Length: 189
Image (cartoon, rainbow, N blue to C red; front, side, top):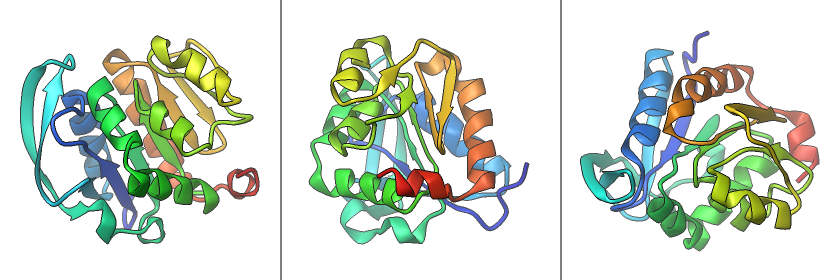
């Protein structure tokens, strides 16, 4: 599957996003021919982490969240990492950006702790998804159905549990990004 001409946004939090959950989906999109824009809370660079505690690589931020709109992109990737996910869901601009993807029916991929941002954006009601197991109560309380599966796709929303699921997660997000807009997804937000 090819993503030629597709523009994909990927979020990264300063000092908190799990490195493989950022770098592997980004590489998968680029290898499939898509263009990736790295977005964070502010411009400059963002350091990733490994296992939430160990410093990871530093990545260049292409644009600050205040300088982008969901209308510029064909899909969104939200990596996990408990600290990073917590920082992202604490940003009103990030939450609005995520909500706008759902309102437009565009595909979104979220792994590990990233569904916290989906809960904060109030877009999980009536959906089936997975996440890191400790988020299942949050997802259920937000009206979603949590399942323990490697990868789940629900109306353009791709979710996975942890870095061990990255091969399946990356394959499914490429598939969903190739398919593009989901009219039924937009109608349900």
